[in-house]
Image (tube, rainbow, N blue to C red):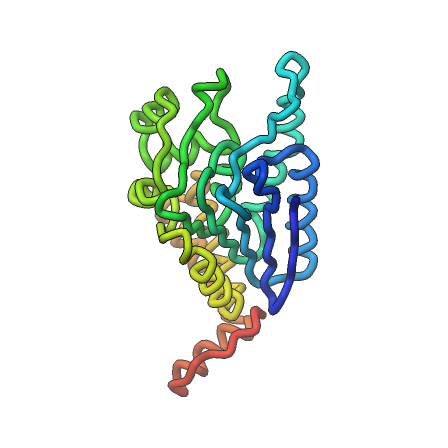
Length: 256
């Protein structure tokens, strides 16, 4: 179900259960966590996440789940939350290509990814009104922070799903493209990042996370930027970038 391939400094993680729309059960979440751990250990410089078939991820695999005995806390607190935290703090730029259904924990995987490219006809939102359940996996944060509370609750109450185009227009994700173009676009983005100044990217990733989480305001973010720049001055890529600019050539970054 979860496949990992590493090549040329890029990890490619694939959800490969198209018959069930890549819905995730407990074993799948453990395997996905292990894939990210292996990619981190390999010190890749970019990571791509995608799902095969007509859906990125339709959410939790509830086939065979008995609601009377369902250990929902074990699933969400014990498996989903730690995975999303690992994904959001992954020490390299991360990218996702998402088509079709992006729901529930599938939406959460996108929340925890740095750059998300979606098919223009993807389906994004909260289908939980029909289940008597609540939106989870960071979905409330995403909808409220990008769309505001009124539109977030409209989507929750109605169960209406946004297209990929609507989701990007509302600021949920990075770019909307025809589904046929997603693969090439996400590979190009990951390849560019994997040959870029990795330490500088990670400094920005940490600052953005601080702003997102409310740990930084304008002036503390300025201080964080200044500290990052001072630390980056001692990296090989900083010196290479300046030399390349002065010599009017393309830089050759090594990620160090």
